[in-house]
Image 1 (cartoon, rainbow, N blue to C red):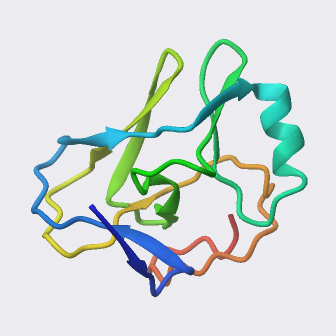
Image 2 (image 1 turned 90 degrees about the vertical axis):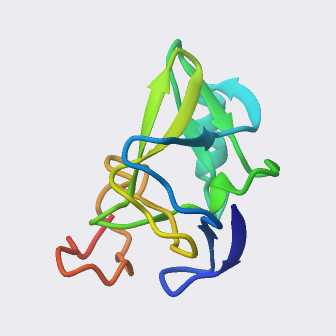
Length: 128
């Protein structure tokens, strides 16, 4: 994986290899915190890298080094996230060619449908 400038937003995470459908790409890493603390932090940060998992826990990936915090939102994503216990794993939705930016549909988020979307997808919902 490689973090580099993105046409969607700031920096993005790009694959260096071709990925197979449903192939596990990696796991979100970061500081393990309570969901309550994650929501408190989200209110004070411009760029949020917090994933809520199970058991009232969250992962704050602000300092993670694998690059998954740079996966940008797309209304037509090429990856999906699976929450397993207190872990968050990323998988390819379909074949992804080497050099492609990895994207994820953020779904419900702290943005509450008020953040303009910049994914440029033909199916863009316009807001996250």
